[in-house]
Image (cartoon, rainbow, N blue to C red; front, side, top):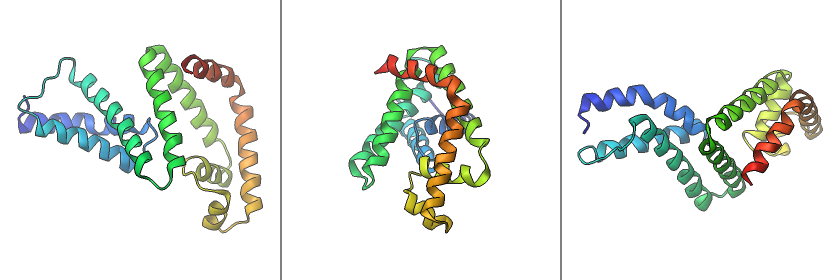
Length: 185
């Protein structure tokens, strides 16, 4: 089905968007790239007898979704940091459920994600850095203090400030978020 030129064109067109999509399942950049590369490798290896019944775009995005969730499950089973991957897998499953529900759910999630990212970006620089190390990198308060060469009290204070500011900035969206989450659990 694919010759080398078609495959290169497909890769060039979809690689970056698929990596971005894979990151929606809470994979880091390296993990997302690995997932997408696996998909393209499977396509290339099975190019002579692969059957795509819907659009290639739908096929690729569905493959990335499935492979991203499988990647997290595999990491959960083999990782020393199981709590980290349990959280990421729960988020990925929620994102998948919302994505499959309907287009408006996806738009709602994207809107909420945009508002959350904007609120985080509005935090003072050091406060934002500490908050992101805590929430996105899953570092402990002690690990953050050591990495930034600051006191544990400073880290706790900055995280508390961040949470208060985010709660205030995002309060209009909390009800919507709760409704969306309850709908899927």
